[in-house]
Image 1: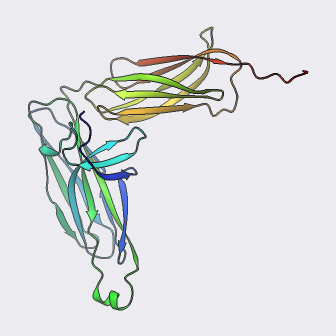
Image 2: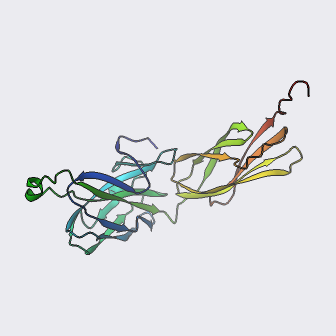
Image 3: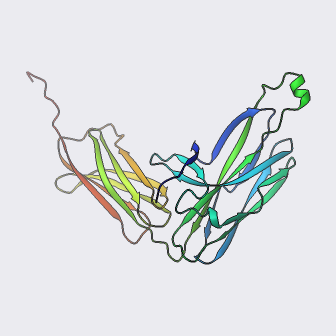
Amino acid sequence: MNGFRRVYCGLIVLSLLLLVVLSGWGSMSVAPLSLRLDISPGEDGAGVFLVRNTGPDPIIVNLSLHDWWRTPEGDFQILLAETLDRSCAPWMLYSATTVNLTPGEETQISVQLSVPEDVSGDHWALLLVEEQPQPVEEGQAEEGLTNTTRVVVTYAVKILQTDPVNDIPDAAIESIELVQDSPFEVVIHFANTGNAHITTKGTVEIRDIFGETVRSFAVDPFPTLPGEKRPLRIQDSSGEPLPAGTYYAIALLDFGGDYLIQGGLPFEVAPADVPEGS
């Protein structure tokens, strides 16, 4: 990956961005918020999502095409379309850039992808679905209502094209960093090194010098895109310190491939300080 040319929007929590503007209240809903399209190179595919006006007034909804990414901290970024090497934005057509919806009305937005023959692996993009802020009416301005708060909801619909023929899921534990030995805390530096979107889960075990597991921690499932790196922080929240001794921390992760990946780190827990005169 060559990196980003420019970040278009800052960090966005999950797939929902709230923008505050002036005027009255309005509302809409969008579902689903992600489309997974299995399309081989050289073939076409399509998906749909619905936009519904759930408010009491007519609304105008604008749609725009972007790329998206997650930072190592897991924050969601919206980028200019075609920023990423694996953007599918150049191959995408969608049925409308602007729609007008009366109260209770819904419309179906279709998304079509034509995947080139000379690519392989997974690609992705994003459609922002944003209610257009309505101008303040003359009567409202005369009545001094221009300071009324309006929340305009913008949804991010993620588009993921998966390659059923050439997907190569792969991952690596690049390093394990011991933050502290007691209470135990490590950071596992994980990288998606394949060309496929993957979901990874696993365990971290603490073993003593005899190979016996004395503590075990679950790594909850988490997604990563090709090229994405993620620091996994594992903490012992039991409140029970490890006895003094030599240990080995072992991370065993399942990324959905034909094998598991493993990393380890030896560490020592020093004896507790003995008070003088005891």
